[in-house]
Image (tube, rainbow, N blue to C red; front, side, top):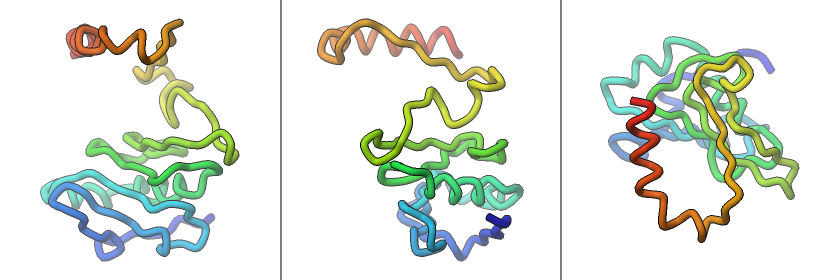
Length: 136
């Protein structure tokens, strides 16, 4: 698909920090695209092809609810950096540790444990704090 220029008027303001490109924007979109940014960050959204890449994410098989652009969104190789998507396996989706990054080792990591969510729940607060202190 050709590079589509996305302008500010294509985004619908949901609230002060959430903007949406509706799935009616392009005929092949399965879900809308949502971007989290404040007013001061808005101009940066149009500096590269990140929003175009985010719209492309909305066409992925099995994508669930939205393609999300986090506040650090900027152009990547396929997914935009800061792009987040969930997909449903039974609708053709995939399981991936990340849409970007793990292939070039940019700090994205996947950790697996042999515990159920119920078994892990009592440790989540402590685990989150340990991870926070290790990565900051």
